[in-house]
Length: 181
Image (cartoon, rainbow, N blue to C red; front, side, top):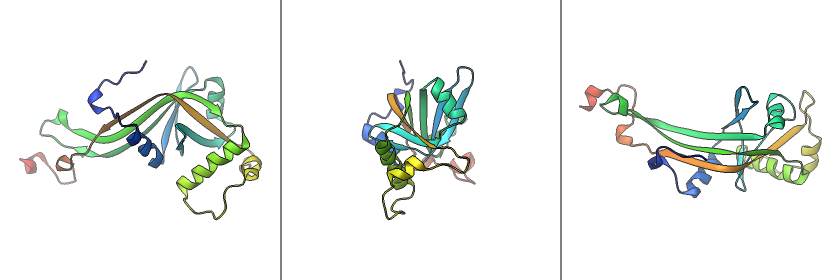
């Protein structure tokens, strides 16, 4: 189904991919309404081998998900640009993960609360002195009156790529091909 063209960049170590997903703070959810792609940045967690995110229970994202739950989620971090005397060999150091799968709404209040607690621990670790109450998750409404919806992306396919940074080749302001000669 999915094939990575540059196999030499493929990350085979699932532990590295998991670690990257655990520490990354923003991911990009790709959806399609059948006519137009729709990609939005999101806070997320990688929990029990799935992506979870939350947001308002209505809006364009929710409408698209309800009509087509197939999705793609991408997380990427850029580590620098690497120079080469040959312009076409100038390269970027990065790590990226692409996940394709099907979205489902988390409807169980206990499961939703557990996911939200994991999100709080990721983004504001140890800030709250009490665990999140299930009643808060169930009863919360935004300033616009919308309930919180929590979604799970169950992976059908996960792909990771990395191009490690070679510090000797890292570009920095003022560096030039003449200086490198």
